[in-house]
Image (cartoon, rainbow, N blue to C red):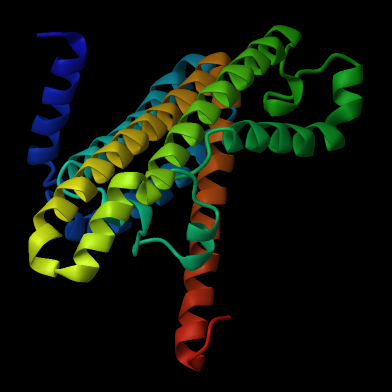
Length: 268
């Protein structure tokens, strides 16, 4: 058995032990539980950042938080294997979040914009400290080597993201291919004749979109892990704090807007 198969088997065993959702309709409940777990992680990360503990003590915390992200994508993959459709029109996220979805989730290159934005915000008020050579123990004092490695990872991620976008576009465009035009014309004449053929053709397209989603989720996780690997433990804590704050607060904002729209009978 390959290491990838072993990891998948361990993930499935862990999922069973932790009551991972086994159907798409249960993923919304899982998502809410995962948000609560991310909120707990955020509080622990904030405490660690404030305490300025030794880097060796922070590494297990960083690894544990990354493990929670891996668990999320393991659960998502289990749900996708049963039905990919809900992942491209999720009900567990807000309309605001769905507006910015890319291939069933967040765009991987956003992680670099997040990192640079947080680094800039921490850099400005501590410029004098950096000038005199005092370390800031956050994202303000990334080294030239780190910045070069981050740039290399960014370039790679842009290329892979483009490949996935092109693959997704091809699947979307295939809805109007010759076979689909032939089938829809036949269905207009007699629904009973071509209904099964239509179902088979759409299943092939759903399977291809499933592949797109799997590639996109893999890139999302690899990007996150790749950035954390480049950062030292203290910097990684600050980056993970920024990532959790962005996700949780945008989700909270979007849900509030949706609730306000429902209350007034119109979108906000």
